[in-house]
Image (cartoon, rainbow over all chains, first blue to last red; front, top):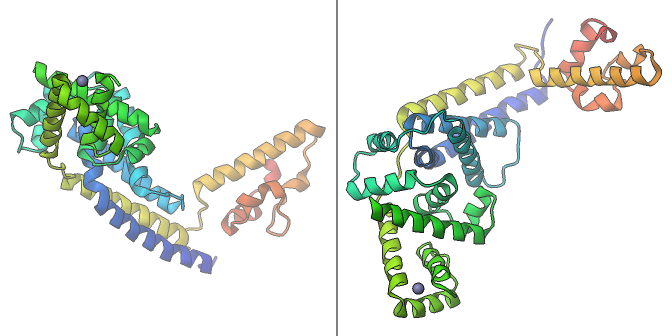
Length: 175
Length: 152
Ligand SMILES: [Zn+2]
């Protein structure tokens, strides 16, 4: 049976190409921030690579499905954060902190003792405090953006960041 | 305001998220509370330390995997729509079968018989409930050229 390509399908091909181009642009724009976030959340370079892959595959599929994404940056971090939390929940046993630290140093050799102490203290915080600090301090999001990513209110983000800093300070002092 | 509340303001100040009235009140408090002033210094040091830590870049191996996966996805989409393969998308297939199954079920339970006319599906007489799925030419084709849908 001879198969004709319908006009509608031809436009689909063109559209797929432009989707792909748009995907590549977004990927290059956000790949490092996404990876950095996952690495600091998980303290595990391998897991951070897996999470990054999954985040961008989801982005690719959303574009192919014409899902409306109002703010790609927030969307990427919402997805990355959920995947990280799933990963933490499913981790069979907690990875010893020293091992996490080793993986972080490996990814970034230029760290001095104070930096190591900070990373260690950060890694030992509970997820709600760690994620808020990473989004604010390392990723530079505003309280409003963090509230959107975490599904919380701005006052709650502000209070969480204060508590996170207090805990971080105590941990750094006790090291 | 107590010291705990002032310390929340110290944290907000470091983040550049403090109102001007709050800032005035905080500065006044810091002049007379050495504990909060010490907290402010420590928080500032932590902030500077963190700011010194550069963004960790995505390793090139991870980057390559993601780009090659997206390229593979793209070529799959291209093939599906280029006409070389007239295969309905699996999801559409599943949805179509589910709809047919559900309508058979609901009709049987209502009058105990299987009204076959409901399953003669052509582009001209699609049922309202099946409309969404059946508008695609390739899906319709599977019903008209395959086994009689009543066997489903
Ligand atoms: Zn005070």
